[in-house]
Figure 1 (cartoon, rainbow, N blue to C red):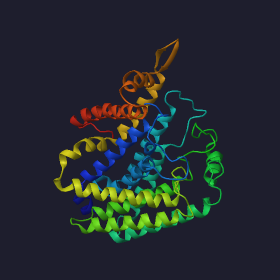
Figure 2: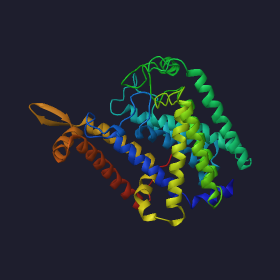
Figure 3: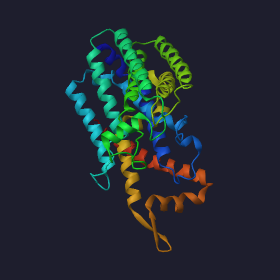
Figure 4: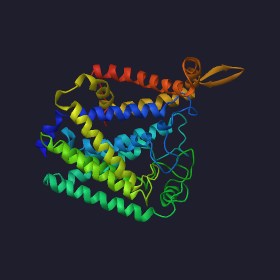
Length: 365
């Protein structure tokens, strides 16, 4: 597996581009100027269903899986893997605590927390199987994913409502008050639904192994065919087990992983091997500092909500709201003004990451 890592290390532009594009999409959908005036594709599905926004988180977990067998991190020890996972989990908790630091009700599940758990499990799985031939690792990863997705379906099927599903009951029993603040009865990144999310990361591991194992177009065909199979299976399964991001249903895993694999193949064909490197550069900058981008974006949003500005009439408004109303609302229709604000937010964060990239400063777990 050492040769795999060395061969892949010079061809990671596509992965950085894919990661950077995913992070850019995350910043835009998380930071509209006005949540009441947002284009539908930039919102999550209310419950069952799938929108472009619902692809962002599974795409990132898929990318985490792709990166595990590549480069120097493929040789990480179990202690190093545990340390990285702990750092990511800790950053997620720090974001949840800020700015109130209320330990009594702080949300324990979260996006970074789920990423940390999925990385821990899949990285340890890869370390355990890495001494075997490539086809054995791929076979075992696919087998593990199959078992996980079928087991999850069998355990959760029946009541799939937000408060009534098995996962919500488990989360209430384990976390109590430490759940998503908007509900306190269930959590979109809950404990039980992290199980199929591990399947998403395992499928990313398989794609990374197949796509970067050796030069040539054969690997692209293999992953493309595999992606088509995942999509077909996922859409068929969705007829009895609906696509649902909050529950991270098994059909959702297959469909989003299939789309992620196709996107990875497309970026690989477009950007690896020295092609179109200039076009890739902005996304590479975002992708190489993805963890920092996530953390800074989260802190920025919360800080701007914390700072209050005189809005006239004796009332104060959050700094983010004041900026939107003063600078963006007059420029365009409500939905376009809201989108412009989100894009400006991304532009500010990009300038920070561009400055850091010039100095080769990256946040690594």
